[in-house]
Image (cartoon, rainbow, N blue to C red):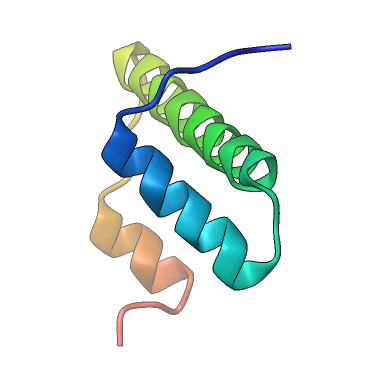
Length: 70
């Protein structure tokens, strides 16, 4: 169990969203935390990779190899 104090303005927005969508506030809080954790983990993984020595591949080359250079 976790208790979180939110600013009143954020709580009002969360209440409104929950009412409009028929979902619980907990649903949106869980979703927000999971998305934040995934983003943060990806960021930290990227930082760790940048700190490693090794060959770098330019973005343009990666895009070309993946057919995304259009």
